[in-house]
Length: 180
Image (cartoon, rainbow, N blue to C red; front, side, top):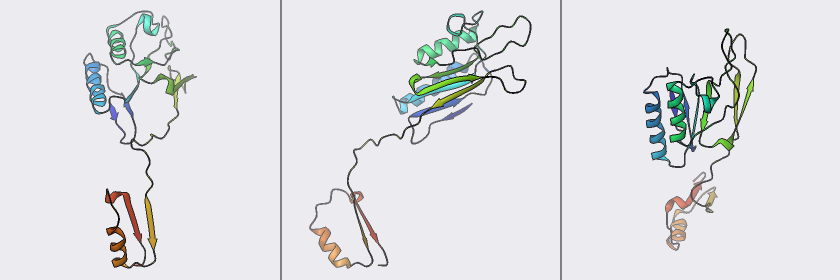
């Protein structure tokens, strides 16, 4: 399982490639809780071939225990399941088409999920998830900052100039001295 919290994003991504166990959703819940404790407004998105069955939620022919766990996990974290069409193509007599790949997200309006024909001899449809990523606005309002560039400088005059100013923070003033 890969777990990423980008420094500049409010999105956290899980890519799950581990085996499904009964403790899996407990582990996943602990990771979601860590993310939400760091940023309560973080967007959670999880994509995986969960290989679970749930009759009412995923329109499977039956509900298994992992399917109940996946459903409860999605409800607990207010995640929407965006894959709406069968991802598994029956390849044996008696099999039925099933939604086995889940894309769970807390922000369903940000994504578009499309299914395409399988690649090669795969028995799973190809799933494509599109998301428009916008820059995150800064938390503080933009402030005008001053930038002075000099070919040479008289440090005494510069000190006299700054002595007459009230400076709240030195980080507000940028000074570039070229060839000083």
